[in-house]
Image (cartoon, rainbow, N blue to C red; front, side, top):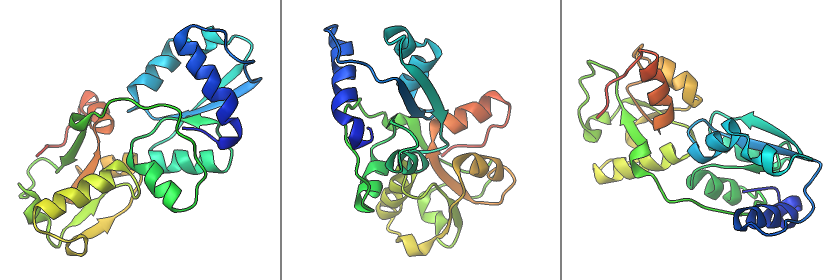
Length: 201
């Protein structure tokens, strides 16, 4: 997904790169937004795939905590291209953002989870009624929460929304400052690796 001003040049560049044909002239600089949960972008960055393919282009990688922040930066021209989940672009375009899709990858439904802290008395979504629930507004976790509430026979108004950024929420969950969190698995995995493993349901 990218700023429409660079759609033609970059879209052709990436397409021809993947097909092995002669690419259009590469831009002098390219600012790429990514999240640690985007495996393809993390691999491209760590192995310097674009730097090797386009050595004359100065490539900058800018990390974002979640898709909505990345798309806001994309919309105002702070970055040229970014990779995010399926829901943030819908919210962004509904708000008037001018974005162009240049690629897609298969969905990963098991990469998204709903969490509670260890020892929580909450064991199913129906028990969230009246409770604080933290999520990133306009993200796939927002969509996950809405769908889970609907399946449990609850309305959004039945919960108390808490809207921190993903990393702040991950810190607050074990402390009991929010009852439940819908978020991407990458934050969970990084916290588990650091020995701070909240329970999952």
